[in-house]
Length: 250
Image (cartoon, rainbow, N blue to C red):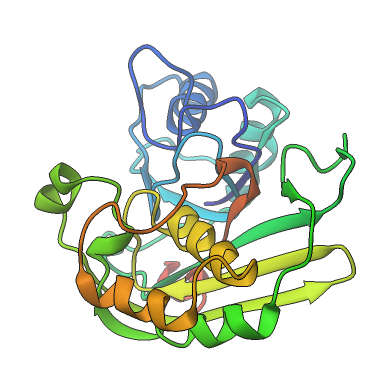
């Protein structure tokens, strides 16, 4: 299923026993719909407060229902801040994580001296100008296959995670008072995008040179990047597969 959600009030996408999560809410709705406890798997794990408009989740069920039941039916039981956009019946061999070739994220920055009630959940507000050309020059250092340990928050996390990733696109664009950072990669490390944007903002404000940004990446030292900016500006836009999800339909 392709799922959209406002992650503000959730402790991330992955199930936690004592906190509200996206997985927990979808599984509760599935139980109400099918009468059975069902575990789901998500294509990309999103942190607490992070949103998604193109998350992909999968699950196994022996309940025979039309596909419309997994959109209309689940949306009836789901809270207002989570919705199923599409549903497909997939082959047994389909793996929602391993079959994905890339994930796309966008971080949104609102340039404003005054808070925006409408944007407060979905954009990081800051005042002042950003040097977009310098930020994009720094972005060029991200594209390719790299050890991204510098964008991990701690040595402990770096030891637990393989920190080499392939980044296919990293770009900063501006549209009136909004600045967007778009990144496409095979997979992501915890807080990676938020640490990247924090460092890119430093470049855009002239607090870090492009050369220093390059050196930071090459150092492969956990905790070098940042600051880690708030989760609310980050959204999982899309999960890409070799072909459309319909390819996997029976």
